[in-house]
Length: 114
Length: 115
Image 1: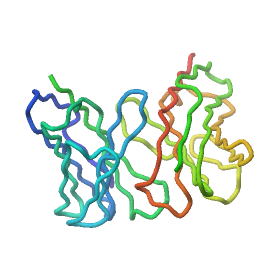
Image 2: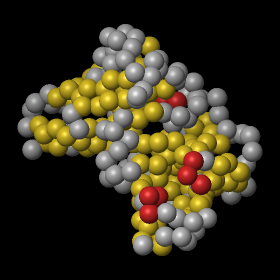
Image 3: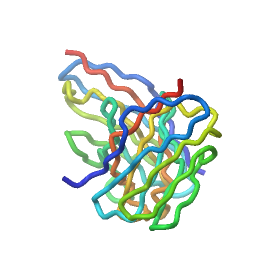
Image 4: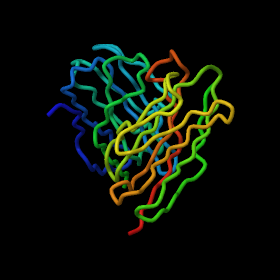
């Protein structure tokens, strides 16, 4: 089935450690996005990518990094510089970045800092 | 600048009764508006969208929403709630002609359906 796969589903991290969240899609979409979700806060855009080897910062990029070496993959690294990393992270894709409003989401990764 | 306000953080209904989830928006230009649903620990799924065609928009699972420019509202309704409708709902706004990375999400309304 076509879709977006995020892993791991749950992740625990000690303070000071970097962690990488995986996002893979087989929808042949050009655009991919990372969002952060906190309780009662909606979704906030971390990074997005419109094409391979190119990506742009979203609204809350500080303390995060991404890469887009392949069309189907868009991993997110949460670095030790992120002051409050405990959150639910959602990866999404769309055929392109033009406005359709329809993003296809993975099931998310829940990161907890111990 | 655009913004969206979901007027209720939590709505509780009984199975078989109507659902109303309220959303007001602010947009400098003609807006595009969307409703998404998120079941627990899952990703979001698009329910319906308004992009300047008919003001009454029908979506999946029997939901619909009406765009009211004079009231700057885009409320989500369903005539009869089902247990499977229990989830969190997000109202989303963007300026028409903008990009998918310009979407602004509301803070969400948690819908509880009681048997």
